[in-house]
Length: 121
Image (cartoon, rainbow, N blue to C red; front, side, top):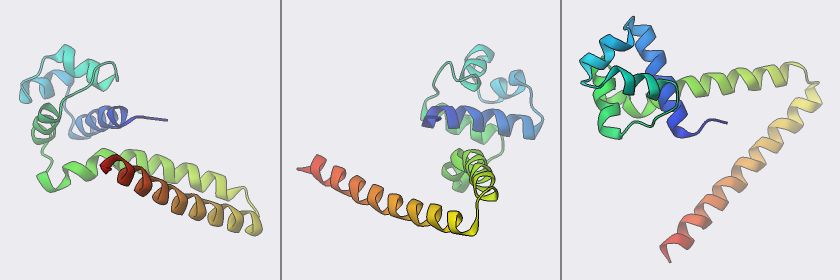
């Protein structure tokens, strides 16, 4: 499972390649060293939020899209995994899996709410 920084790293690489930039071109446009950018894309180094926003701007992303861009690729991969799992299931199995996922999601939400409220206390 990826952590948030791996998602960001993958996002930078995906957007850079989509734009047709080399690492050198993007590093120059974002005022980063090529070495730093390369390590960020490889998941070997983390990038700060200020530098990430600079990279996104250099790639032509709009500010309103900054948050949603992070998870786009990860969501696509998760959806494809879900489709593969569901494809091999009977109708009864699909129904069971969906109901189980819904129950897990509800319980996760409750758990997160409880954790947040206990941190405030």
